[in-house]
Length: 326
Image 1: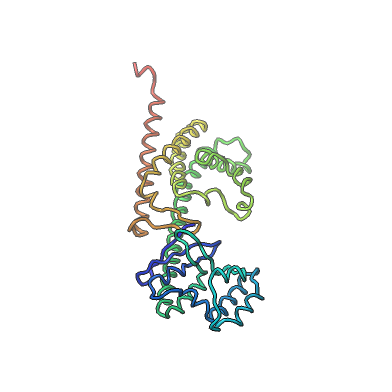
Image 2: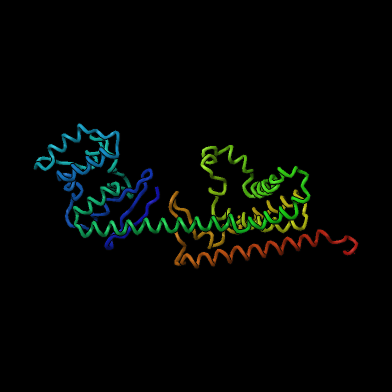
């Protein structure tokens, strides 16, 4: 389980994912507060029990309302005592969870954690809401950055390949005019096989639910995959223009994919955009989005130029007349 940290008035507080919801550490919210049993004292309060019960009623279909009614009647009395464990076990609540061991403690759904923050002090509650909103903004912005990178990788060089197919493959195609569009799909699958090891059709058959939602294999590719694919598209378009046989092109593209994956895994720019969970992408070091885009384009251009030069060099050697070597 991956933790994110928000800093509230100098106090580091963990935020974890439970299902699709964020839960905030109540234990860490009060670790710098004077006194003991803050969470227990908060849960003895009648208003707290009312709030917890209302939240569970709205969002937890397995919540035990009868037990809640008993606690609500007793809340506020001097003899009333409540702990997170007692509340969870008696009512089957899921808005509060207790984690044992290192890094454990009491966590609560963000709604409940904000209410607990108000109990600590209105100022503290405002601070924690502000910092949580900042965290979500960072996650949203970096996710958009990652998506922009994906769009860049998948679209820029695809135009080069389709243009090469139109000008150099379609005129030689033996397919009927109405079916010549298959040539474009065949070239796309040549790259899919070189990089992923399977065709678009095979991916759709293995992932029918995603296919029905209009997704394809590139929607689930890493940034490294998409950078390599961009370079494969560029090189393949040049080989098509040079009338390189398809089987030879596949071999070159496949070897290039293997080689580039090994190299790009060592490039800090690629490593710097790391996926920490299904919805969070962390920006690298202190680079701004504009700086990241500039560096990304540099990597793409340099890799493309190098690969094209290497290909032309190898192509020249292959075309040398054996008599010329003597």
